Amino acid sequence: VEFIKKLIEIMQLTADNVYIVPGNHDHDRAVAISQLAALPKQDDVTIDALDQSFRAQLLGAFSKFDTVYEEIFGSSYRAEDENPHSVCTTDSISVIKLNTAWLDTDSAAAPPLRIGSRQLQLLLSATATDLQKTVNIAMGHHPLQALSANEQSRVLKLFQKHNIGIYFCGHSHK
Image 1 (cartoon, rainbow, N blue to C red):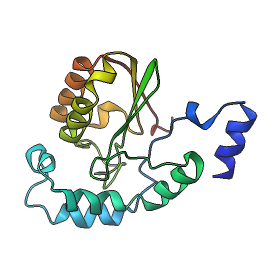
Image 2 (image 1 turned 180 degrees about the vertical axis):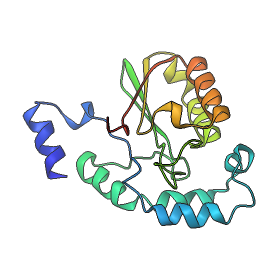
Image 3 (image 1 turned 45 degrees about the vertical axis):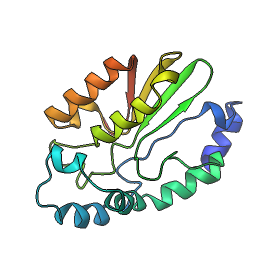
Image 4 (image 1 turned 120 degrees about the vertical axis):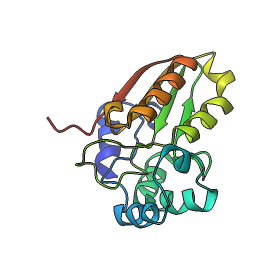
């Protein structure tokens, strides 16, 4: 927390101009492993249909990240408790923050990773009016290539539909 606050100060920024997203080291992976193991299948249809309490348990694994985020920014990472993704909108820019790690059980494994494109669709639909007025940037920890082919296709279609022109990510340590 202190490092990020000091970085903001040194760069002469305000917290309003800084955006962070959770990554695969920001959650208790054991929670995701046990929760997802309880599902009959881990396909897109099943992930799309996760109920609120199931999503809340998975997102609860980010409690340390949530605490850090609140300490730095004074607000919650998520506008809605049940959606892993969020949008920050200013007069001219909207930043769509994807939690690409909430369903991650092993980032070192080959794809497919899922991010819950249905949850992203609900979020973007709810903010569609704002997104029509702004330059739209998305960011997440994992690259889109880490997603399952179907999930990647769904996300890219959502980006196109909502005029999201760029995606920033990290994760790769090369």
